[in-house]
Length: 141
Image (tube, rainbow, N blue to C red; front, top):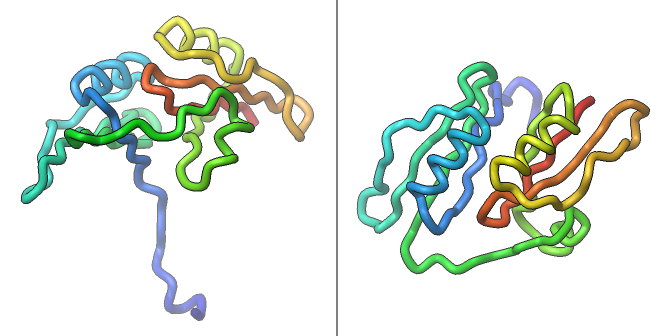
């Protein structure tokens, strides 16, 4: 494919399947400072969803619920997550990883990896799991 045939592309959102759409929407809005749009249904299915947006930066998380969905990967660490193909985590970039890690634990997340230095000197990373087991990476660059 030539460069002239490429169109501008930007990452739009990440989708998370959840067992309780209403509880997850409230938790994500409160814990991450997101604004929820109106819940919606996908016509012809029993799928319900809500899109949440972080107003200052514009990132979005779409929460999806379908009755009968089964639990998937419940990793105990980021290393365990990469033993399963497919979705592993989403990442939030912050100025103070330690402060955000502690704030997310207080908001109901479970610890998965305490803040630690990564490849670049001064860059920190940590992982938590939301109340439903989804991994969230917290990173400073």
